[in-house]
Image (cartoon, rainbow, N blue to C red; front, side):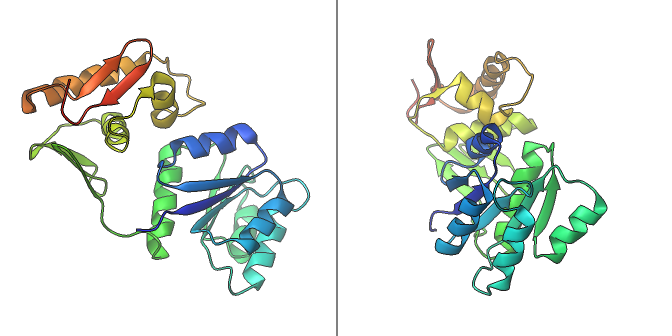
Length: 229
């Protein structure tokens, strides 16, 4: 499948960066910090989806959406992500052609599921949800991971963390990277939660493998080794 391309039109730099962090690393993201730049990028390049703020410098998100939808070729899904949360705001956004509307503040998981749903409905995301890495088989549709054919009993964030490791095998991931991706860069949870969840995953994986695949690199981070330690 071709690399998914997502345009993020958002003038809050920290928020835009945070969205980039928790999107799958296989997704190619472009950030526009003002309305005019975002509008031009949407017209000049092909994106699979646009995340669009409404209150932007130079050109508002409403005006961008209106102009895009007046041009038949600009049919990419647009997810409005904004602090404008009144019913008239939402209705106006949909009238101008928004495919979905999510208000700030938002939950990371909800944004990801809305993005996935839009990509599927538009035919830009296939239905092959299975990822096989070494002895692991992950099914993102069912949110399950099996080791040597035996399904693990995973809590929500345990699944998210293990999937992140599986998507980056033989790659060093720092605690900060993991925390930002799984808990979100604005989370008030302590960084030490990463160690707790890694420990839980190891306990669940250990009985099903000859060697422990999750390796600790002291003072650096963690790495999923396909052949174990």
